Amino acid sequence: AIKGATVAGGLMNGIITPTNSVMPDTPIYLPGSPIKKSVYPVGTFGSLDAPTALEVSSNIYMMQLALRWVNAKYIPHSFISMPSDAFTKLRRNFAMFGLGQKTGVDLPGEVSGIQGRSYNSAGQLLTGSVLDLAYGNYDAYTPIQLVQYISTIANGGYRMRPYLVQSVGETNPQGNKVSIMYNTKPQVQMRIPWTRDQLDVIHQGMYRVVHGTNAWGTAHRLKDVKPSISGKTGTAQTFYYDEDNPGNPKAPEVINATFVGYAPSKDPKLAVAVVFPGLDPDKEGSYTLQVAKEMVEDYFKLNK
Image (tube, rainbow, N blue to C red; front, side, top):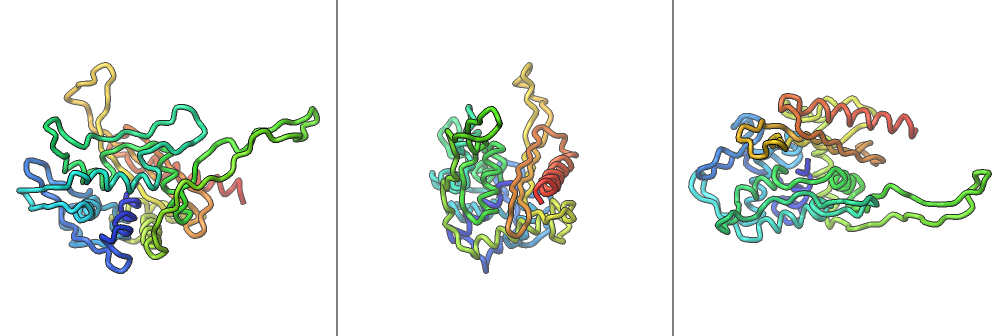
């Protein structure tokens, strides 16, 4: 779901441009490790541009982007090396959108998410995990971080502090407001330093996630929702955690399914984040998209 932030970082750091965002769709082959690829079969695409990579949710595109971004040295099947600041570069970019840090929401107990290890027990950089981080399958983010991230993309680049309480006041016995003791004002935490053309690449990709025509698009079932939705799906692979047997070597694989989006696609008024943890891999898309559909439709019925 956070691939929009990865593409944004690639654009803002000059790895790709709005007029030249094509990357080879070649899987990553690391020594002693399974092939690192996308969901679709190897060879489906020879190359992809950024909007199409978002539409089909290409893991390969994000990894190829990260290799260039962190100045990695890579020879398929035999060698990969990255500078020690590889994780820092990617995480600093994600943090601009609120991912991996506290948002400041007015609720007690907010956490910053879960950050994976950067080094193994021998002090070696976990280079394969840098690639996993690039497409969203390493660090873990909270739902409020996800909706802050997608709202930042929706509103043009302003990361706003989220809040639940707008004001606290006092009324008289007749129910008339007599005083305001606390009033929340919108607070901009950061302005993303992208250009209009760079942002348009991400908006185009997220529109095509829902409205595109590629057979491997991930949220086309939302294309008839009114008003129009743009967004991004997410499918993170993980394992069921059994509290009674935390070291279970046969823990079943499950999916953390996510959808982030905004509506209308032009001049958005609403941003949503939907997260379903621990799903059967065969059911990863149905719940998130159905809930997102009903959230958007119900909101605009109530707010004509």
